[in-house]
Image (tube, rainbow, N blue to C red; front, side):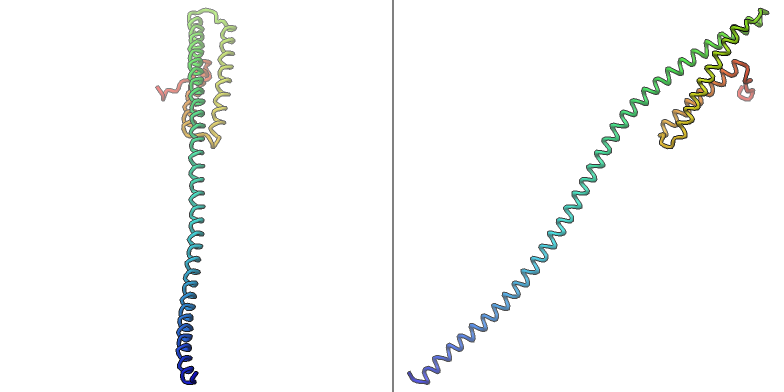
Length: 196
């Protein structure tokens, strides 16, 4: 082989090797860029997954909170319904008590009126009957005063609802008027002329 020929044959190999090295360097550079891009995309994906998990947990907590609120509302509505039934029952009992008190009061007024008529007619007053009626009236007055005291005690409780407070105030006013009537029947109170 001639040395010139070998030299020329070597030249294309060097050239090819140079091209291969250049291409390899370019691919190596592009590979590194692609790896950096993949790393950035993986970081973004991890960040997005973390954000998604955080948002998912927040939404689950909000759903649990709303469910708890609904459950609490349902429980409170059921309790209010039971409480309303109890209040209606107590109102019925109070109305019956009021009717009974009114009939007792009318009976006592009738008896006192009969006593007054008998004493006005010049009859000798039956002090025993008057004392008996007065004792009954005084025991009724004590019972009513006790009931008024119970109502006032309930009114001092800060947890009493407004509707119950209004009802209790009305009941107390009625009982106080009834008590005043009982006192008047015994002559302990004189009627107020200003109210006439």
